Length: 131
Image (cartoon, rainbow, N blue to C red; front, side, top):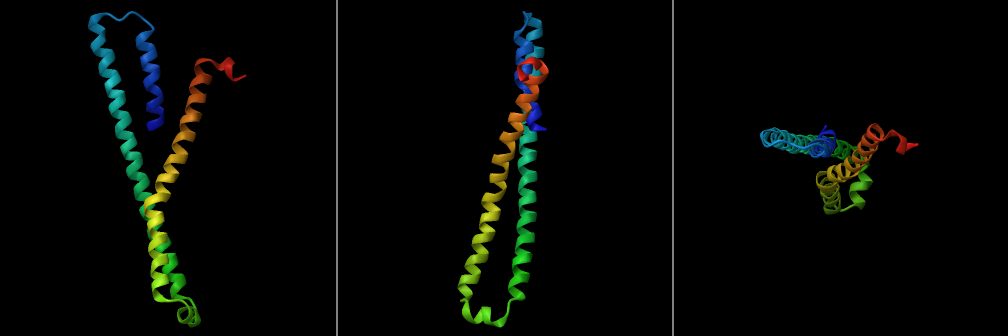
């Protein structure tokens, strides 16, 4: 949703600058532009909060699966592997999921959606350029 609103901003500016605007209409165009900008910031914040929520859910599931795997490990595993190494592995994996995975996903998906949205906008406004 935030990408759609981000694509609406240049369309609104193009609409605004395409014609001569009277001084009494300037306030209307400015209010709409600011409203679109505020909505864009709001939806980006909601997107990031949702991504963090899903990331924490993934971290909980990963921790539960890892913990269950360690509990089901044979006794020889605990005799050969120091406890510190097991704990360090848990903390490193959980840190990676908590800190990096969510943001890497956002930094991958958002530009792809932006490019697709730009292609769609070009396709709607100048469909012959896609052929």
